[in-house]
Image (cartoon, rainbow, N blue to C red; front, side):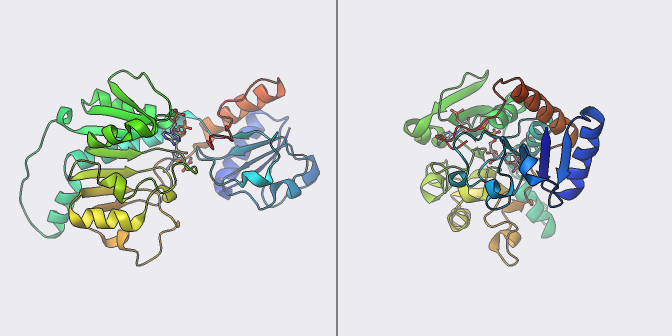
Amino acid sequence: MNIVYKSEPERGRRWQRLLAEQAPDIRFQLWPDIVDPEQVDCLIAWQPPDNIMQHFPNLKVLFSVGAGVDQFDYASLPASLPVVRMIEPGLTRGMVEYVTFAVLGLHRNMPRYLQQQRQQVWLEHPGRPASRSRVGVMGMGTLGEAVLQPLVQLGFDCAGWSRTGKNLAGVKSFVGQGELGNFLARSDILICLLPLTAATEGILNAELFNQLPQGASLVQVGRGKHLQHDHLLAALDSGQLSAAVIDVTSPEPLPVGHRFWQHPAIWLTPHIASQTQPESAVQALLDNLRRFERGETMTGVVDRERGY
Ligand code: NAP
Ligand code: GLV
C-alpha cells in the first residue's frame, strides 16, 4: 500500500513514525515530496491538491484527515472512488470536551460574567438547574451522539435533530425539516454538529434564530458556511440570542477587524474544537486499510448522494 499524506507537516511526521512502527509494509509519503505518484493508492488529506486524479492517476481511496468531507471537489473524482471521513476516538473525545465546556459555560452565564469582570462589576444573576436548560444538538451522528451523553448525565434536558430518527437514552429525537421548528422552539442552547452539504449551507440564519426561545445561545462547531455572520450579529444585538461560542467561520482565518473578534457576547476559537489525534487516527486508518484490502466495507465511507 502506497499512501500520500497532505496536511499539517509536523503531525504528518508523527503519522509517519507511528506507521513505520506498526505497519512497515506501508509506504507513507508526505506531500509535496512524492516519488512515483502513479503508484500512489491512497491520499489522506485535509486540503487536497487541485485535480487530485491528475496528480495520482491510480488512486484507489481518498481519506479525509478530519470528520468533515466538504473540502473535496466531488465532480472531479471518479464515482467509483471511495471517499472516507475520519472516525476515531481521539477526535470524538476532543469534541465531547469542547461542547461540554461550552454548554456549561453558557448555562452558567460565563460570557456575561467575563464581561462584568472586565468592567469590574460584582453583580449576580439568577441561576437555574441543568434540568431547566434545554440543549438541542443539530446532527446526531458520530459526534452529535457522543456530545449528548455527558450532557444527559449532567442533567440537561436534551434533544437532537437529524435526517433520520434516533433512539438515544435521555434524548428526544426530532427528524427532518418537518420537526425542525419544534426542535428549535425548545432549544435554549443550540449546538451545530452538522456536516456541510447543499442542504445545510447557511442553515444558521435569522429565520432559524427567530424560532429559538428568546435569549437562547449557540455553539457553532460544524463548518463556517453553516452560519450567516451578519444574521448572528443582528440576533445578538437585538437580544434574540444572548451569547455564542464560535469555533468555525467562513473564511478561516477570520479576517482582522471582523466584528466577532471584539463582540462581548462571542467566545471565538480558531477551529480547534476537536483535532484528529495521530495515535488513534493511525489505528483507525490501519483498520480501514485492512478492511479495504480484504474487500470489506470501510468505516465512514461518504454517501455522495447525501453529501456526507
Ligand atoms: P456524521 O456522523 O456524518 O453525522 C452527521 C449528522 O448530521 C447525522 O446525524 C445526520 O443525520 C445529520 N444530518 C446531515 N444532514 C442533515 C440534514 N439536512 N438535516 C438534518 N440532519 C442532517 O458526522 P460527524 O462525524 O458527527 O461530524 C459532523 C460534523 O462536525 C463534520 O462534518 C464537521 O463539519 C464537524 N466537525 C467540526 C470539528 C471542529 O473542530 N470544529 C471537528 C470535527 C467535525 P442522519 O444520522 O439521519 O444521517
Ligand atoms: C475538523 O473540523 C474535522 O472535520 O475533523
